Amino acid sequence: MLSGFPPVLECRGVTAGYGGVQVLFGVDMRIQRGEVVALLGANGAGKTTFLRVLSGLEPAWDGGVWLNSQPLGNMAAFRRVTAGICQIVGGESIAEGLTVGEHLRLWASSLEGGASPEVLAELDEVFPRLAERRGQMASTLSGGEKQMLALSKALIVRPELLVIDEFSLGLAPIVVGELLPVIRRINERGSAVLMVEQSVNVALSVAHRAYLMEKGAIVYE
Ligand code: ATP
Picture: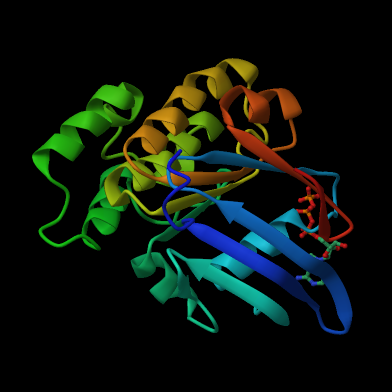
């Protein structure tokens, strides 16, 4: 990790909630370029809410979020994608009614000139099972294949920060074992990664650092 550079992500004192119920109570976090960071915590601690605030899907009530030193403020979710935040949610980053190939083309269309032949060749190499299924409806993929497709988005888009919620939820350990090297690869390609993961073993087998969230605040780093 390159600690002399400004952090990819910096959060200070982030608070948020739903209606009148406060869920986040001043979250501080800093992720450097090159890092894979795990966010751990019990059910209901506020992890998903925090990721939604990062992606602009929930407004922060207070505090600040900076991406490469740029304050995100009230930036809309779709603009945060262009700014470099790509979020995938275990198995749910799939659109109904689109094939595997159409998903890949959709994500590539956000890049100037589309996905390069090198990137497409890399996808075939990393996920041969998806290469055989370009014409299949993505909604009919297995859980592991859906997660492969979701990770393909990060391989295509190469975000500044990849945010993954519930990485291993519902996946067999052998599938998780196949996918962890892909997270490392995405990280080595230049994306910092923040992953929420229920299994401490899974998280710590890939993460450089971890934060523990309890009752909407970071209690341990
Ligand atoms: P899990 O590991 O179970 O997914 P989490 O740490 O991701 O939990 P959140 O999903 O962020 O926790 O939930 C934090 C709190 O916010 C919980 O008490 C939850 O009931 C509440 N909450 C989440 N989403 C909403 C919503 N849309 N409206 C109202 N309350 C919500």
